[in-house]
Image (cartoon, rainbow, N blue to C red):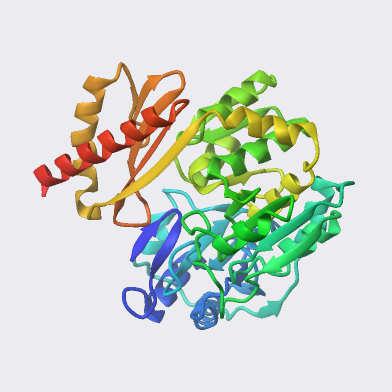
Length: 432
């Protein structure tokens, strides 16, 4: 079981059981000052069972529950602004047998100070039983107000991936004037896995040749992958396109995670904007946004574009609408042409989480000697030159260490990554 600010995740029935749901949701109740909580789930088979258990735990502790049933994560975040808190039954892009919970307070994910109050045993006082009510969301209408409409009636293929984006992404895209075709609407018979970032998306790629663009969502609808002209685009492209649209809308101040493409930062600055860098993770991006009143930003590794005016989370559905509204315009082609000369590679290597810190310490010592500029705010990042960098950091959700690199030379980028993977293996062998 993984317990981080990204949520609690585990294989349901093995290391995550209903007793865990009761405990964690009971603890979460103590953080809910409004005594109101919006709850929703993705399409995982275990979702209904966990949601009912979570509702019971919250109500037992005096929380009134407002039930959205099966909805994308961004919808729960949006409604949590109105009710004061939210709970999402999902493990995002993890395999189907996994499930978990994401906790929302005041419209944003929990932070490092709030996490211990949820995962550590708490003594709770008896409360009056809360009530449950089914609700609907105005998410699609609210999103359209920001996006506007497209005049080009673009032809778009939408790969739902059997997830909760069904009914929301297609409705929004149709409402702004897109001509859409849907594949993989239902989880049963879906031709791909839950994570569009790692999946080959073969069916979407084939069909996209006859469309202007293709969009693929993960199970809870917060991740978005762009496919264009039969080619799957890097996650940073999703962020870059969201940034380009927000610049056109007048936003100037951005926060990008430390692993987001340098090309996005350079594009923003050329357009007169400002950029600050945060640790990887949407909560870290959002915290820095709030601290510095930033208007937009994102996390390159997950393709997560974030518009805090609308939602304190990466929002794949809103982003798909923003991108679709740019199709056929100069800003769409400009950002793609700007970014295509940069190469990003993201790899991961299996390392038991109990050795993560020791491995990172070893790597920090070696990399600090090799590169003149390093940053240890999130793992170890080595700046090689103005167009090249390497980042090695431990995962918050899996027994892996992640390696991200970028360069304006593809051969150089591959060498940077291969050298890093070799260093990790050497360090792991020494500490275990």
